[in-house]
Length: 383
Image (cartoon, rainbow, N blue to C red; front, top):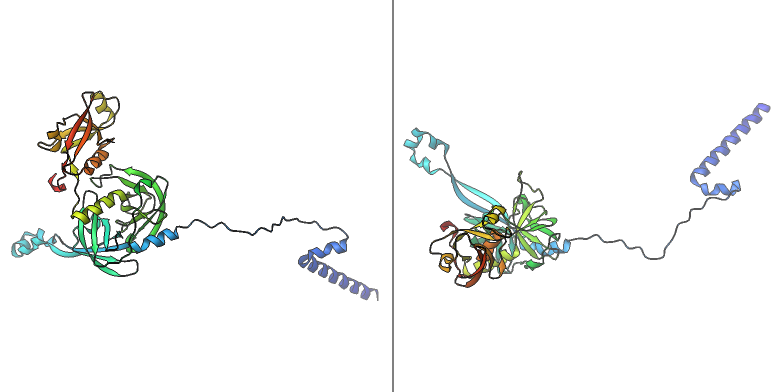
């Protein structure tokens, strides 16, 4: 009998412990009622103000506005490569046509920006150089042919005319408003993937001495620019064109975060001249410039190493006729400073051929004013 009683007691205890475990796990708030102790209270501060999430900055509107005006450019041309059999004198004797090489069709890709609803497109000269067939693929998938309207190799810019009208065009930004640190977007056709947008900032302005173009005033940006982006758009956060993507600094061929774009001020000037006159006309003085280094400044007894030294003058050119001399240091042209060689070339290029301008030079320690009539800059191959 006692054994049966202890068995029932043990079973009852087991059931109670099981029930307590379940309550402690699922409803711990009920335990204080049975223990007689007050439960600890966690107080949370409540607010009746509506909760609003801060919207992250987005550049979707700028990209949506600009992307329809960026085209993919596919070019092709016939080239000849040397036939390896032409190195064999026997083959060359019986097959003289081997010297003409092997004709093959080469294709390349790039980008361009529609800047007029009539179908005018700005791109890089190196994208379309020598091409005998130019095809544009629009953002909506249409493919149209285009012809070269004009090119300016010295700035690496070219203008195309598409065989279509009523096209979406991108507006030019005010170039003077661009500053280092501004957010910019690069739009182009990297590796033939189609319209692609990358984000970055303006890393520097006025980059020159890159040895890429004769006239250099590049915008440097860390927005990713890759092969195929050349000729594409660099835009601001309002979707306006601030530059034409031109080249990258890279040892691998891919983007390393150092890209260069031609500023819209130069691109617009080239575009307007080509559309209006069919060519780009620049001023010319016929001088050979040289940077004023610290050594040059000491040799000429200059107070500061600034300005541009004239180390050569073309016989019969505008500079010689005006009386400019060797070792003159050009400080200003038309009231605008000439701190270095690229800036001097830019100032001269701005002069309309036939116009007169005043040049300030330092000669034998004295500031001298010279009146010069600018000539027309000869084509690159004649210089």
